[in-house]
Amino acid sequence: MLIQLIYCSVASCMFSHEELSGLLRFARQNNAKEDITGILLYAEGSFFQVLEGEEEKIRSLFEKIEKDKRHHSMTIIIQEPIAERSFGDWTMGYADITPEDLGTIIGTNDFLVRGQSFAQFEKGRVKKLLAAFKYGRWRAKISDFDTPFDKPSRISQENPDYSPSVAKKLNRNDKYSFAFQPIVNAKTRQVFSYEALLRGRKNEPAQQILNSVDPSKIGYFDDQSRSLAINLAAYLGLSTHLNLNIMPSNAISSPTTIPSILRAAEQFKIFPEQIVLEILESEIIEDFEIFKSAICEYQSSGLLLAIDDFGAGYAGLNLLAEFQPHIIKLDLHLIRDVHSRGPRQAIIRGLLRACFDLGIDIIAEGVENESEYRWLRDEGIDLFQGYLFAKPDFERLSTTFYLPD
Image (tube, rainbow, N blue to C red; front, side):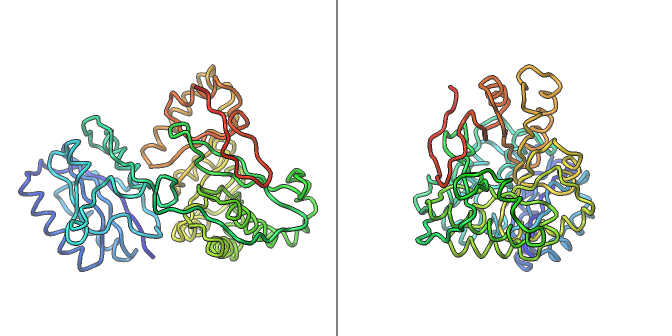
């Protein structure tokens, strides 16, 4: 299994440029033999390192790194399966990282020949963590500047090589269909994703459909309905992410969940990383180890993960400590009247700090009025979902939404 391990540490003494160059040469030689890639940054006496490779090789290397007396106070930030590597070779920052350096650090061999830099990497968790490192998280403080992490991902409308998914055929069901509600990015003023919401064939509410499902066939129904949501979204020309709801118990118990999603994505030409699986936080998870094992399978396939209604149940903080999703969706009770409720403001600010440090995006869900929106926006939240912006649209991917000035 391909994994990515990101950690930071404190240098036991200040390193000169010559010492760093020697460390770089040694790392390149050894990691090339093991097909381990990544990046190593050094700034103001702190190291920040990303390692990518086969799990056993990464663990073996990290055991050696832990014993290296040239640094201490090691902190593992993220350790998770990945579908593909973020870095094509071994690179390293300079002793004193300047704004120009961080934008132009380049690798060797074919990577150098292509003239690539950080700005040309696709957006992802590693870039969010590098941004956190820039702002002084994880030990180091780099001067304030705008990091050029602006390459559009392969599913972005800004990417000239991207073409929307278009399924030529729609396999309709005679009992149910889907509405799609936009999740909007207030910073870019574009649709970030659409949440697929179960409906009857005449737009009846989801519960009416679920009540008619035989409990013994709920697993089959879940698989079939998610496949239809993917098919319908592709048929409508999906060019963003697609949010699908899933219960943690299904992630653990159903061996067909992941394969059915990936088969549908491949069939209808949707990238796995376009799909965001929303896991409801309020469902009780009795065994974290089993849950984490199931989650690893999701992550290694490229699917993205979100915790829905974060803050609604007792499992949320435990979930966040045990594994790091790509996104959390704030529970609407935290958001309600947040502009005038000090305790809620303090909690959200704390979550923003934690998620920034962990490279996790936040969606403010259920925002009802402009006062709530403006407070959340001023605090740095970019992603929003709710009737204030756009209502669910039956069998349509609406690009029309409202954003307060």
